[in-house]
Amino acid sequence: MELLEELETPHLDNSKLISLLTIKNLPKLCKSIETILSNDISEGVIYCIWGKHRINREILKDGVQFSFQECPHALTFSITTKNHGHNILIRCYTDTDIQDEDFMESIREFIDNWVTGIKKQLNL
Image (tube, rainbow, N blue to C red; front, top):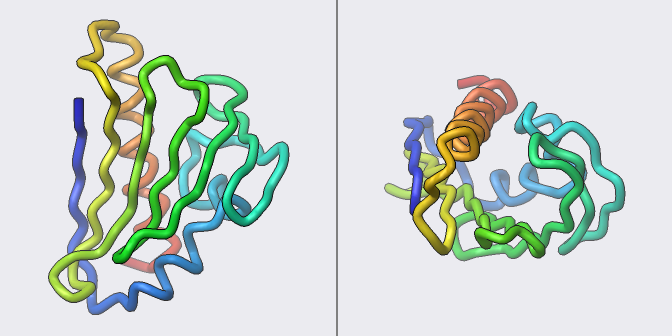
């Protein structure tokens, strides 16, 4: 399953986006992520709408990908640029189709909170 949101932006340099998307900054960027319990450059532990989770951060060519390491659905989300930095893609995906409507709704809320947080942080 995949959910995708796209934001139009003035030109955004990939390095600016990557430097914003740190584990430490996650609560500023997405209100579904409440607390950072531990923080390293590439891994950490967060408390979010789904409880306590260990996550990994991976730098991609055009952004950053985060993955929930122990999630039974292998939940992963990425924030990347496209069109030479004139769009931001927020993508959340799992390894299976989600049948639980409450969990599906929480994933939609998670994506909506990312859209709101990124707009706020980048003054869009």
